[in-house]
Length: 140
Image (cartoon, rainbow, N blue to C red; front, side, top):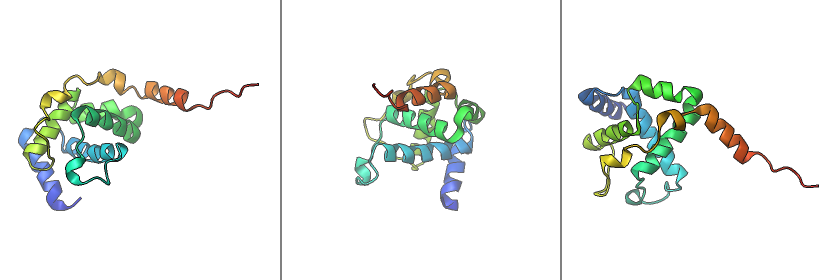
């Protein structure tokens, strides 16, 4: 990221004051992760739209991959306590012309998407992954 972009992120974060600058950078990176995961990177820019709900789950996955069991703690340190906070950050970035939205996108798309304690329970998610990716027992 270039210095100009980082300064713009800093200005948006400072203007709002609720969330750490690192949260804004993380959300921006998580959007790229989500676009890739949904297979939209090769699409024209105007077709890469990601819904608020898809982005929230992409953020969760990206956070668990990046921070593991510390994901929830990192979010709390940044001032992020619920999925609505992701939306607040996204719409701050939109208002700062650092992200775009469609006419159908609303801040309410980010309300109550999941419970932080449950979704960001790294041990639970790790165990679910192990169960779903474990080879099936050989039949005899």
